[in-house]
Figure 1 (cartoon, rainbow, N blue to C red):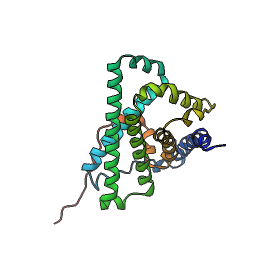
Figure 2: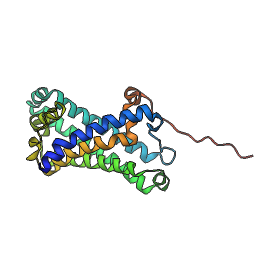
Figure 3: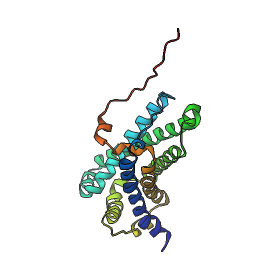
Length: 225
């Protein structure tokens, strides 16, 4: 067994098992641990801009990856017209940079704001670092190895389906550039870390989370007499 098989053939199943099993355990046996634990009271401005950029940037990019996974031929058909290809690539890169900026802002906030830092856990930092690496390697892949929307359906889509159908083909990743390999491995690492973090609250009631208005947290104080 080599490193390629271990990282891209075996580790994905460890990550998927953790993501499903630990999330289910927390939701059933520790439901009160499934919380965002808002730090809005501690600092609001950077939280707003960082959270909006990171969440929406990542969500839209992930939806794009999902389209490539489910409709690879449709994506190739879309890219057959150069203008549409350029539009898709530029939009994806812009969203990746937006998500990268937001993640950096949230990580810098946790490090630099004393009150937020005192309320943070090691897992908070780990999750943000993993997301930062994912966004950074995604942007580097888009810049250094262009037209990913062409080679993604040819390489990544068969690889991901091989994992999901229990017929792993890690050899498809072996010849990809380093930054792309790191981007793929970091995705599986994120899945492994996800159920242990605060982010797990996102999937508990996904529709309510996506559609609810921005939550406002206020102080309630007694007036001095």
